Amino acid sequence: MTHTLPNGRGHLTLVTDGEALARAAAARFVELTRSAVDERGRALVALSGGSTPKRMGELLATPEFAPYVPWDRTDIFWGDERWVPLADPESNAGNALRGWLERVSTPEHVHPVDTMLADPAAAAAAYEALIRRIAGGHGTPVFDLILLGMGDDGHTASLFPETAALDVKNLLVVHNFVPKLDADRITFTYPLIDAAREVLFLIGGKGKAETLKAVIDGPANPRTYPSQAVNPAVGSLRWLVDEAAAANLPGIGVD
Image (tube, rainbow, N blue to C red; front, side, top):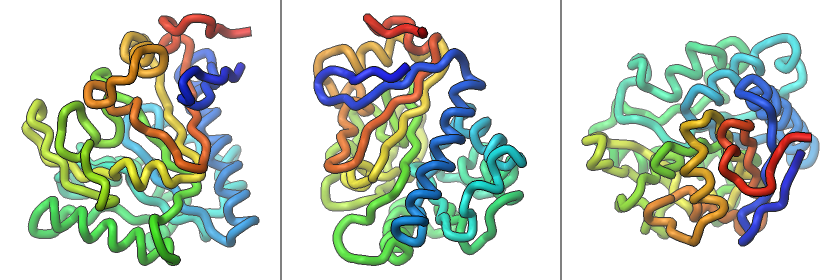
């Protein structure tokens, strides 16, 4: 069941559980990459970290889905990354590569953040330059699909509450220090996210229910809930949500 959300916050599709959520995300990945290649000859996708995208990826590497993705014309990026080596268990890109991506794609189409550079700011600048080079054209690069999650605190990508990256308008990828984690992150900024043809949030589990209600049904408060500020200029904003995460949303249920 799909619902149109209030206040221009996009469309929400409700599924039963985490497995259904991952399957729906995998199906959407197939649909959007195929249509992008059919229409423009290539697809640009940004993945996120987390357990739901991991399961989506595992499904995409199975015979049920893998043959239908145009892997040789799909370039894969990450919307955010931790400042750790690719081999580190905390690396979003490293986990995806080891978990499923190496089985279906090839190195020339997979583009992790280079965390071996001198510092996070240099890595962010290099990643923006790489995105621009591969996307080509002028202006802000347009991804065909940007996958996002949402933390219990309302953050998305590595746009955490009350952090400096929330205010960046002139850069597409930045280093964002997160004081509460005492950690450096690399993240897409709102201008790059909002230029996408489709932004797809994947949200599952009862631990997200209270925050999701605040983000979708509450007053605008994007510095506290950065997920609220995602607002594609031309493309679509979609939320794939399981029953547990949607438990506090009024008027939303399963057929």
